[in-house]
Image 1 (spheres, rainbow, N blue to C red):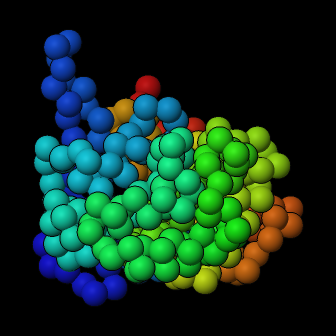
Image 2: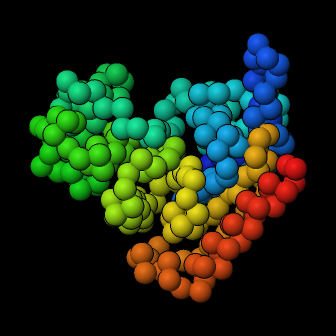
Length: 263
């Protein structure tokens, strides 16, 4: 594989099979995908299709059993060792005995960054997610949406160009989720991070993404890759436009086709 400076993630013919006591589980099959710098790419598909597994392979939290993957032009393991990405999990995973500031700066502490620099980066990250002023609060003093914003700030604290997000808003109510979707878009526009985002929601995928990757039931295959051209400063009102509804329809049709192919 050859690397381009504009390609952040390059996956070719990648497969992953888990060996279990009941026999092999084929999680991903023949995945080809390129994510370019500055893109917001959503993975969508039915439960168990391998969306999160694909994200974890990019993060080198799972190892592919076939094919090739480069992250920032190097193998995924090397990219992880270079701390090339921030990872936001489905749950905030904040330590309840640490303040929001000390939760956000925990990765920097592990990296043995100086205390002065940790505090500066933590404040900058909390400001990006509009949580400045909450540094000394504890997680249990914040709402679920605020806790998830703190987990995003933690992923931003060491300023990696790649942000990996595994259904970060899936457990939140629709009103909070809509608000955080708008905030995430503003954050993406301000930082120009490359984002890989897992979701079960068609409206969320269409609203957030510059590229949507539609996946089939297990073993996960890419059924369709849909480019969008919505303005970066879009608001929730875009969801009422014919262009939005057309993209959503194409995603839905891809999901249906994936089920038919699986049958």
